[in-house]
Image 1: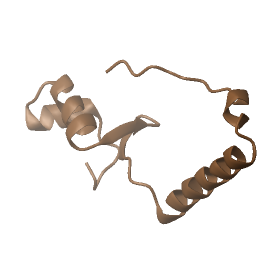
Image 2 (image 1 turned 120 degrees about the horizontal axis):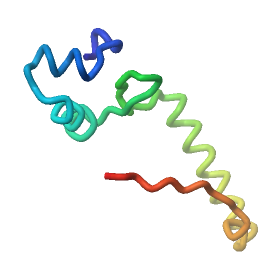
Image 3 (image 1 turned 180 degrees about the vertical axis):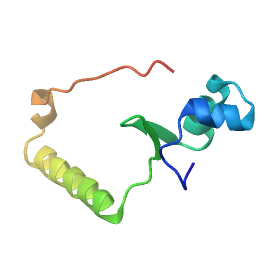
Length: 83
């Protein structure tokens, strides 16, 4: 899978002689991948992505310290995970 990210569940399940749902479970739960643009990709973040997330979190903490009611004005779009 890592050498060819274009592999589909159907191809992988056929090559391994496994049920598609079994392959999906292995990819998502055991190998910690997710589907993006019809491809399974690892959830690993780059150093830049980690730094960006850290900076955003620090900014939010700074806002919260300066204005304790800051998060009461934040609107989020929460989507429940079906699993």
